Length: 95
Image 1 (cartoon, one colour):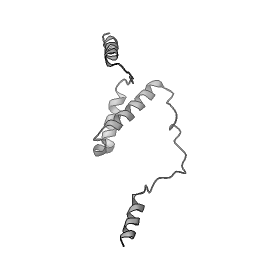
Image 2: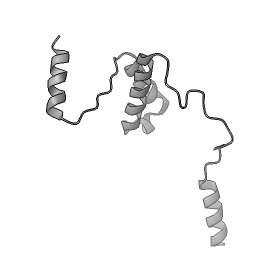
Image 3: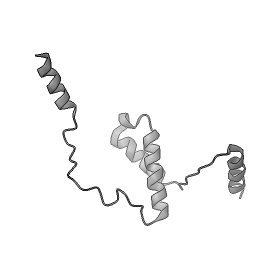
């Protein structure tokens, strides 16, 4: 009986709606043609991945985050020296 319960539990734990036969989305491995749109899309996905309460807020939280990103200019900054990047940011924002 335990084996039956365990096999049913394992069967239900597998993703029932996953379909590996479907082709990937057209945009799955492409950048958006507009660099500003691409930056916003990447920013939205990075922020969504770092949002610890997005699961609680669901679609409403994602829509709110989408509106925030849509209203902002989005940039990605990679650096290895914090002092160097702080100096450059100060110069950029001084204007």
